[in-house]
Amino acid sequence: MSEANSPRYSIVTTCKGRLDDLKQSLPRFAAQRDAEVIVVDYDCPQQCGDYVLREFPDTKVVHIPDRPLFNLPDARNHGAAIARGRVLVFLDADVIVKEDFLELIGFPLDEPTFGAFPGKSVNSLRGSSMVRRADFEALGGFDELLSGYEGEDLDLYMRLRLLDLRSIALDEAAIDRVIEQTVEERLLYRPPNLTRQFLRGQLYQLAKEMVLRSQGIQRLGLPQRKAIMANVERQVGPLFKGERDFELTLEFPDRYKRGLLSDWEFTTAVSVRAKRKSRN
Figure 1 (tube, rainbow, N blue to C red):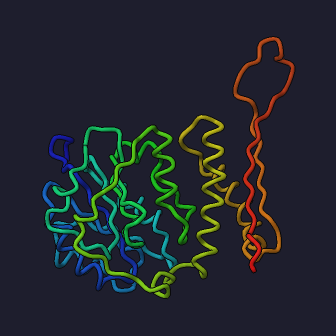
Figure 2 (figure 1 turned 30 degrees about the vertical axis):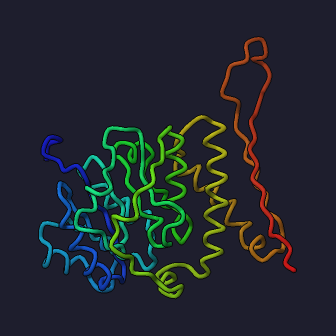
């Protein structure tokens, strides 16, 4: 498909064990004008992809097999990889949008912005977002190392801001309703303990942000990210239990030539610390 014939928007949604929700949300996704819809069947035990192809043949389906745990960033990246729209619209299967959702949002296609719902929105809506595909690809997409309930959306927003993009608040009035999940439903196909998962993700994100800012870059390679996550993983258990504080220091060689000091070696270090507050 040529760029001229490409849709403005690509709506990307994922599904693993949420077919009942998808049956309610997908008709509204498919009703949007100038948009393609992509459903990622992430090893869904209900074979949601087969349902989509049968009932909504114009919808694109990506099948990802052999994934016992649900990795939302990985699933969304697979959907975005086949997208052709200028703007990627990430919506969960439990978000029921209005039939004129995209018109009501009015996303500015040609401005350096990305869209997210404000923090006061219901919890299941906060991870939904809109971002120009070119900006998304420039950052390498979602960070798939944030494989649990770990704030992959916050990590993406942080890196988009490093591209000097402005965040705009998406209007919650464009949403019909959200199918809320219980804690047990949120833990389905994920590692145990949502709070511990989120702590792990936030420590990793903070360390990564410090590295990006200190180096003046917008993305890190997978080996660098894995090294940071390995350091976080070693310490997050004792930190969560209150047994030990968290401290991570990363050093980098100086990026600048120093003229007369060429025979000297300089390094830059960034540190992240965290501790659990005492409980009364």
